[in-house]
Amino acid sequence: MAKKKDISKGIRALLSNIDSKNESSEKANQNLESNKILLSQIEVNLSQPRKQFDEEAIEELADSIKTHGIIQPLTVRKIASGKYQLISGERRYRASKLAGLTEVPVYIRKVNDQELLEMALIENIQREDLNALEVAFALQRLVEECNLSHENLAQRVAKKRSTVSNYLRLLKLPPEIQEALKSKSISMGHARVLAGTDDIALQLTLFDKIINGKLSVRQTESLYSSWTQKKSTSKKSLGGAQLPTELLIIQKEMKGQFGTSVRIERSKAGKGKIVIPFSNDSELNYILDVLKE
Image 1 (cartoon, rainbow, N blue to C red):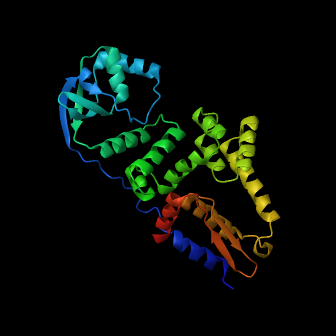
Image 2: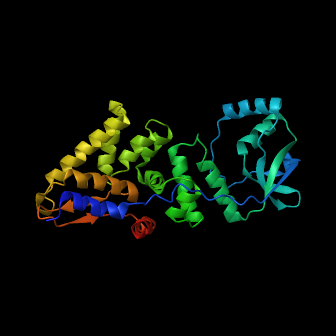
Image 3: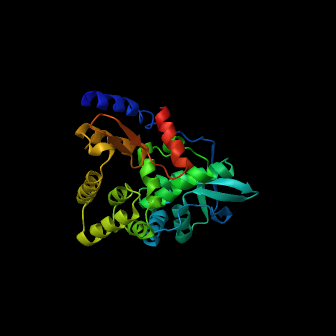
């Protein structure tokens, strides 16, 4: 029979270096032309993923622009003679109008529709004031509309693939949990725990405990772990053998790497299986990409 350390070593070898390439981000093509154009020549990008703006913050920015001018130029692309479409800087655009400016400094980029959407989405994802769901929806649009794999997506937005997967899993949460996340009644940490299971009944029960009991993220993790542990021990899986600590740790690591609820089942005799569930072809392809590495 293989020793526990041998089992751990073998599975860890499968997971080694999965995130070794995730720290590099793809640099955008710097095909820029600096200029000043009339504010009236600029059209807002209707595909802009950001829909809500803090009006008070825009008023404060307008006051700053009146005093100091626009420090960072807007980014636009030319769409017709004398007409430009906004790529990034809608807050500055709105504040400039409020400040009474007639012209603004801009960077003019040569990009197509696909690149425009990708740039707008990535710029918004990198903003610090977006809520977690806005980030998740923007990431999903990049996957679907820009035909990006999870690996390429992670590189584009300079995030680990496990982080990208955690965001995308938020979109599978029940509407009431998504709304609570959007209104900041719960944090991203809470939502990540809730998204760790596909059991909607369990998600809603735990969500109710979080709200009514005002649980911290750590308390939520502890409660979820306790419930799932009781559930797993109540089932007689492969002869009823309980996983050793080493495999429980590896199971948790694999769950983070694959972005889904990985389950390791092992009998007392050492036989078993690793179950990696997926909900759609996109998730399956992501899992296969991780396994190939």
